[in-house]
Image 1 (tube, rainbow, N blue to C red):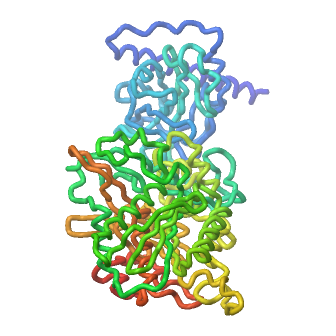
Image 2 (image 1 turned 60 degrees about the vertical axis):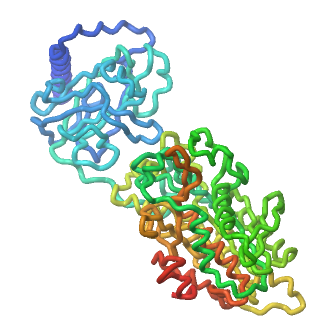
Image 3 (image 1 turned 180 degrees about the vertical axis):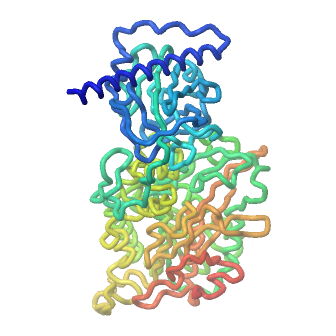
Length: 637
């Protein structure tokens, strides 16, 4: 009993000390202002601040040094604490779904230098007057109070591991005296935004505890999604275009164009800000045409543009106007629309009105999807759109195979090229990203995912590779299709046995190339399907004043082709453009499709059972055409 009385007396003494410190902080804070003190908060029968704080039990973040005192915490913390620190508390907006703070510091900074944070030995206390921060026009209802070493700047420091971050407190500033109180997220302290007063007492550990942030787990199923719960690996893989996976849609840009991460979509900016980085599809088309041998053709070919066409097959007219507001185009076209437009624009430049040119014969539709028939040196080839949307890869393979069988059996195309300007990613990752509000880019998503899973900042690249790698690689239907696309190709069954002479119809394709864009994230590896062994991965070259150079945003790949910035429309010092590995891959696909018709192709069909020579498995980014290129080496290097 004596021990219990001692603990009780000590707790009462600590509470009285905390009360004196909080009262002192309030007096000092008000004394430092030369304005009329704020009115005393009116009693609110529906919201009891003391009861709310009494009910709190803030979790202890072992990676941080701050330990809160009652009433924010249920009990007094233990440990080796320090005093005499030069501290500040700055306020930021925070996304309640991701736990990521953003923007510049809001109004209402507290600090030991201004004596709005006071200390007695190793105990710190302050009082936050909500109105001082919430009147800031930039302030949202969701705020983060970062307790930091003084001089850490005006940007958030507590999103990841940082020496400047000692701890933080998340606050829900609800409007009125009770309106919206029921919407407080877990882990947030509710405070009325106008007349709210929040006492904050805390101690600081003498040394930071060992960091708990480490590498990501070995499998996707061990991660916790931002939506809550583990990722569902059994959901399979989806085809995700580079408009959807990174959230890189339509952006207006200025002089910082090269640093903008919206590759894969449309850009808009002042023409003068592009500084010689623009190239036109016609220019690249002329360069590509100059690589064709023109030695006479004898085979028909088809180039399949496999992509997301869920919003139609043609760009809206407004996209071709230089002064258009790109924000108004959201949802009016899909990634595949832009890839198909680019492909046809390159082909259009190959028609100069002479007998040896590539020219359009007709257009129509197969299975409700458009095709374009071209002639070149007396033989026809086709460009066929294949809409796969954001489909599970179970469906993609079947839809593509049906189109290939049609062109092989009905149109007599014995040479085929499949262009895939998309990524194959786990469906559960794509769904989690698309359902999380407040994330501008896929990098923001990775940052939030790393924080919620205690993955260290130095391991975010490993986390990126984990969430970008398809699940069940060995059994994914689309990747299995890439390894063995048809019942037979190149005169052999996929298992290496010969064809039955009585069934020549099984030999659908005599030559087949699978081509895919490597991705726009600056990784040292291509994403799938470009990473598959039988697929030619294509990275992006950026236009420069002296020609082309590797694009900083491009994932590494086997070969590289011009990926922009491609000029779509210009006028009145306003330009709409697009860029990305999505537009480099069709350059390679077009050449292979036209070259395959030739009696003497530059890139011959792979030998039975062999991968195409271009799919050599490296990441050397060898230029596809020009001096010291893959074509100059006959596609073998």
